[in-house]
Image 1: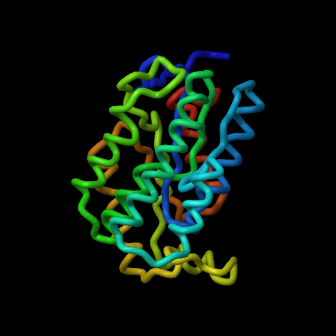
Image 2: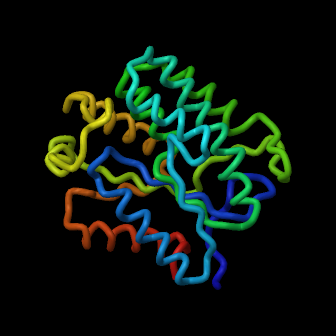
Image 3: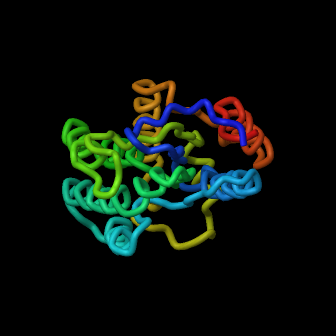
Length: 229
């Protein structure tokens, strides 16, 4: 297996952390599974996970976040509480073992949904990001004071009206999927701001194409970054 061109940001951890971002209907879930299969065929050990969720406790918090009405701060705190469990129990141990972690959404989603979508204070989100992903010691790893952040983030950018048409009759919408087009326009703006602030980490994928065209774009980025052979 050839070495990758990634420079992992988490001290003492040799794995690769890749996140998939975008609104529901953009196709990220389809392509994260396809990429996982390709990596496994190349001999990589893959941890495939999601947010909110990834641990038994975080999955319980996911149900609350996606379905129960609540104050925006309560929502943000629950999302980051689930993330802390996920980071400590799943992501950091997998990276320490040298695995490839593929995560369906991570902190960029909090800035897009709770920040831009809900209008919640991004300064508070930034503080939560530092606390949850950075300043604490992670037990059993060499990651003391490491900042856990994806090495690569695929953003599946899709107009809200196209995503809504794809989801029609697919399933009963959760409280986020039931939001207005204006809400998702703000979410997209939130993702664009995160990309602008960290353009080297992000790869914007035009998701308003055929599934094959989108997968070709994902493969091109993955090969260019040394993730796929």
